[in-house]
Length: 140
Image (tube, rainbow, N blue to C red; front, side):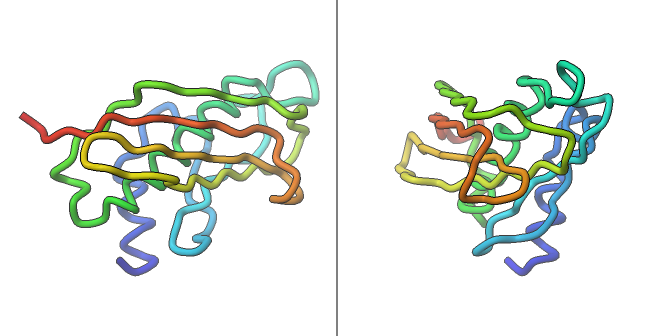
């Protein structure tokens, strides 16, 4: 898939909550979409900081986007269902643009493991990470 195809595919599966929070593909990194949103009232927690649920949602969308892109042409023939999620909050997100990138760490016939991290200024200093396990099945 080329860059435009990947961005179009990710837009196609973005749920309404993601678009209402302003999530969009910012750019690609090694062929995987980097999802981002800007700070605003829709993602605000305590004054001056991101809400934990907003960070969690961003990480989930980045993980799903990475899995869908990795599945590629099989994407339409495979149903994915999250079965386990572990989120690590490392520091408070501030009033800044926030990015997240997912990476498929293992993919089998029935299970996929995906890791995603969120950052603001420096990808080497994540503000949160997520580990997700997905069940892969054929649609009925």
